[in-house]
Length: 188
Ligand code: GDP
Ligand code: MG
Image (cartoon, rainbow, N blue to C red; front, top):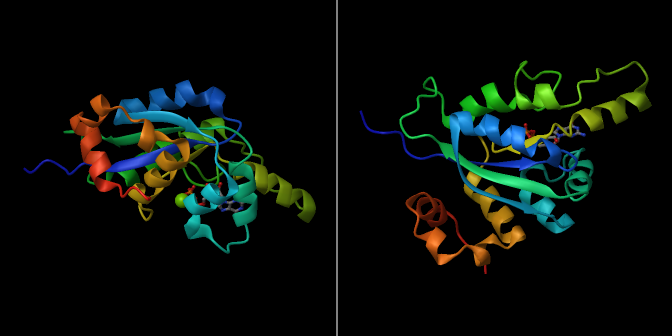
């Protein structure tokens, strides 16, 4: 059987959750391979660029304001060679079993978004409800979904954090990183 092609994803630890980095890293490492780690402070333009697929949605501004409000550690992960993900893609499997649904109330117990997120249920009061949902939807981490483009997302984050320029030549010669970097198009 042919080995599965390498599949990448980026995890962002959202503002306010840096103290969970160690725990999140150890959960990711059990099922995936961590290729690169860093941190970034996004500008509004960079946050909009990262979340371009949500352009014009009612929550876009809330999301961008939140993402620029603090430091964002990031981890670039890939599937572990030889590990089976029950026929699902690596990203689908990780999302279902390790990350959890967008709304922590809907996330499966044991996932990051369930365990570390805010799971306050909605209330009758419309104004309160909006605030509760806003807090809940901060949902601890970003993870490249199956319908999102990891190389676009990784490109935005590596440029914003200065990693494209800072990656030492030695690191670029590592096979894992060469495969990843070859898939990115550096923007001049
Ligand atoms: P994800 O791929 O599971 O992160 O979810 P999406 O790509 O649909 O949305 C991106 C991010 O926008 C989510 O992780 C949430 O932080 C935020 N978001 C999505 N839907 C809502 C919403 O209805 N209200 C608010 N306040 N934020 C939302
Ligand atoms: Mg998404």
